[in-house]
Image 1 (cartoon, rainbow, N blue to C red):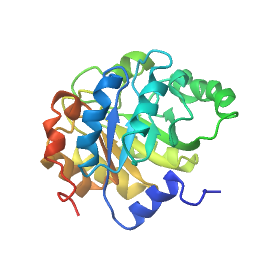
Image 2 (image 1 turned 180 degrees about the vertical axis):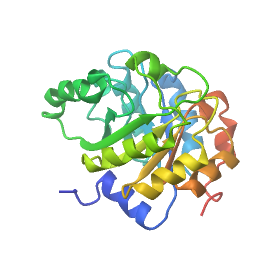
Image 3 (image 1 turned 90 degrees about the vertical axis):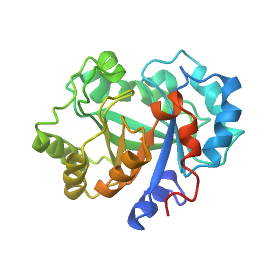
Image 4 (image 1 turned 180 degrees about the horizontal axis):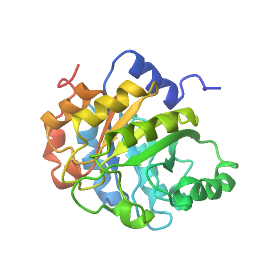
Amino acid sequence: MKRKNSIYSQILESTSEGKRMLAVLIDPDKMTIEMVSNFLIKVNASIATHIFVGGSTVDAFVTEKIVSEIKTQTTLPIVLFPGDVSQITNKADALLFLSLLSGRNPEYLIGQQVKAVSILRDISLEVISTGYLLIENGKETAVQKVTNTKPMSVEDIDNIVDTAKAGELLGMKLIYLEAGSGALQAIASNIIQKVKNEIEIPLIVGGGIRTKEQLENAYLSGADMVVIGTAFENNESFLDSLKSNMID
């Protein structure tokens, strides 16, 4: 049963009302405690609706420290986007419980999830099951290296759509199409459209989005939530262009 006012309930409500959601992804491996305050000033002034925290490789205890600092600087919901179980902390508001459906490595399909249970059992953290699909983007990504899986081919859209639908039928609450950090190409419009037309749960799209035009295109194609990370890491002024009055 969904908790009233849960992060997932809020996502469902925004999706049903056609409200666009934007998550800023903060990689604890790339942001120091000292950088958080100035960065969050810009995030708070932007159209961002959520903050995701996580990375493919993060040292132990760093995530919890970063999340704790972020918590003092914003009222936006903080959602963990972990590369492994070491990044789980009850300082956040929710956890994307990711299963890498695009790959066939059992460690990231179910192994990490089983390891997480002993941690989650003893903490209060909203868990949101998420089907995670890595889509090829023109370069090898950190996710690909860490998970030892290959991204899905953009030439086989039917496979992408069927995998997303399988995730929904398995009970996933969200589907996340990911091009990867530093992607050369964002997820193509036709892929977003076809996945969105097939599933009935919220759709998250991330990777390779560096301009307002690409952001708008992702929304128009059917993304309920867009995640931007590298664009902010490499050019914080991009946040300045996403003021809260940019998108209705």
